[in-house]
Length: 456
Image 1 (tube, helix red, strand yellow):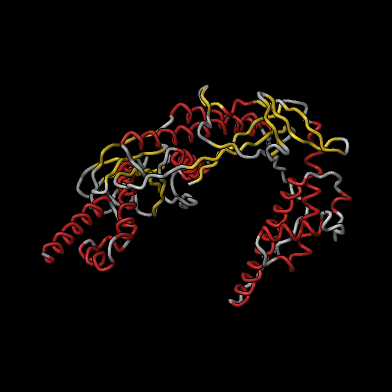
Image 2 (cartoon, rainbow, N blue to C red):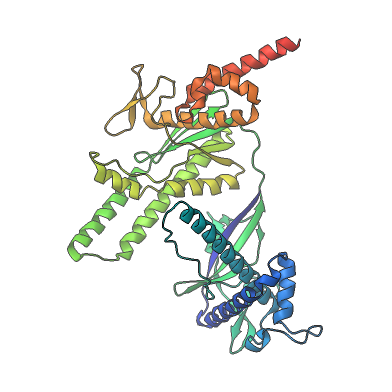
């Protein structure tokens, strides 16, 4: 698979001269969006290359085509051809997305009215102005000369080369090159606030592991950040990991309490300094969790990291401690942890998967049925009398559900129906546990052995 990462290098040179480049690029883009919209009926069925060729004839004068229907060259003197073509392709993308949204809106309207319901959704509107950023193509708009970087910008009604100084700290990780083995692609000029950056994409081909005999089951929680366990396809547990960041979480609560006090005194305030600290602490927690999960997988030779498919969660009404739980859910960065782990796992050739979340903590991993959890919800009492970590039990079930899912896809339908008859909980996904996987493997092995004996 293709892996792309982006380095955001801040421009340290004078940036006032870069503003006209953004302005004229956005004007050119608005021009092409208008042209593409007018000509869409004629070019809609063409492929992108043919669309580009037709639009270039309509807007740009050449010896072969001295007359252009739309006066682009008159309004945009000496506009570089590479940026013009980038504008054209971006405009085609915007118009294609607009008509696609419009078609979906019409279908949704017909379906809603057919059911006798009122339709309130607004019709999609076409915007000509967009906060787009130009791509600087190498050798034509962007050059590297030893330690210097040159870009072509629009200044005083002309396109000129100018040298810029970049803050290249993002290219290093622990004083080592961060993108060794990657291919540098064309950078983009991006403005954030009052600062300008060059965004450099880096591409690398990564081969993901094919073997799936060992996986990591991960349960993301509100008390522990994550609890992970190593499982084999036979249901054997090889290792366990509890991830928590008590210092960072304590600091997070301290800063949040300071923010709450400031709000109680002054009323509504933006408080950017407090939020910067809170965001930095949350970023540290999520990044640390992702790093530990990937390192844990590599330690045991696992090839897949399995998460629950978590959606929006709300505390039940009338629940004791609902206010505290609501606070935890508000700052629960479960999706960020998943995304960070996904990126780091792919970098190291590992796969990431998700399974159904319902019932993973509700049912005991040993197949004894529903559990009773304590007030803190970190311990679970099994029907057998065993007291176990509820998060650890859930991680076993998460890993097991992944293997059951794989076996269901790879097993013949007749064999699967026979196995399902002997292991009834397989029919209800919310009741699948580690014990279900162990029983399933035993049934499948017995079926295969009997089939081999019958063939002999």
